[in-house]
Amino acid sequence: MTDTAITPADVDAALAEFKDPESGRSITQLQQVADVALEANRLSLVLKLTSFVAPLWEETREALIAHLRARLSGLTDVSVTLGVEERPAEKIGQIGLAAKAVIAVGSGKGGVGKSTIAASIATALHRAGCKVGLMDADVYGPSVPHLFGIEGRPEVDEGRIRPADADGMKIMSMGLLVPPGEAVIWRGPMLHGAITQFLRDTAWGNLDYLFIDLPPGTGDIALTLSQLLPLTGAIVVCTPQDVALLDAVKAVSMFDKVGIKVLGMVENMSYFECPNCQKRYDIFGHGGARRRAEELKLPFLGEVPINIAIREHGDAGRVGASFDDPTTAGPLEALGHRLCRNLAESRSQEPPLPSLSVLS
Image 1: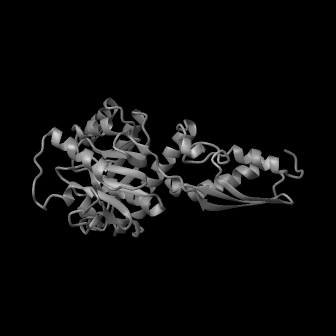
Image 2: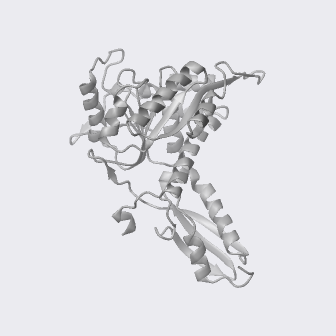
Image 3: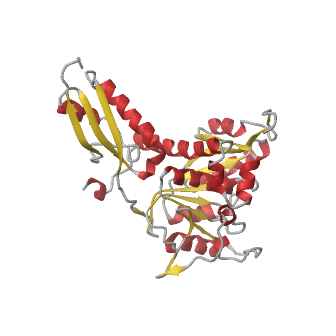
């Protein structure tokens, strides 16, 4: 386009080419652009984005500005203000859960920090502005309540279990129902019933993300979940050493067999940086999860170091404090950001079928 006067039709055409990061469809198709003002080749508008992609709001705004400058060569100034697009989740599966993404977090073995990573990713997205729930499906060793400092049995209101509240994030766990120190000794059918009840009878409300912290290993809870509702996918957590990676590959294979897409791998306890001398030690090796993810053609979501502060915050029931600590916030925030970006890129390439309510 030559440097001539830009017309409203030019603006409409340029906007129509830009995709909403949640749906993968044009922002004009879903009416996410408002207050468009064009005067003397100066353009201003409001771009409305959903809470599902809250971590991507600022980079999406900047990407739209860059797109408009490239597409409209005569543009002398462009201003994009962000607004909120309210788009409730549709109910999925037979249990009536309203969530835009349901993501299981698993590992091939115990002791790799799976629950800490699940809690951290959920917290990262919640702090960014997403509507998040976290379900602790590790019925044998539920640790999520401890990580968030939550105690007491949940209340039942009109036949619905009221989930615990962690600064606005909804949490449900067997650890809230069983007295501390008491073992849960259940066979498969009882586990299936408990997971079904947690999903069906908990008042989760309208969620962007529901994270499900699975028991370690390759048990049958993943199969139960695959039968109950369409999962968006799973995250596999492992540590760098070979023996842990072997078990992580088994977890990837398990998810594949039950039809659950693996959204990425996380390398926990990736390295240790001495707080006194800043020297780095690869205690369990380093980079094994990234290499294995590349071999399996899976996304790599990031690496989290061994850090005393992360352990202390978890032990104190203050997982969120790791995000206020500059030594630990970066790697943990990056996990949530990369997951959100990967989902947006996937939807851009293959937009999901829109619901009638969205298009109406």
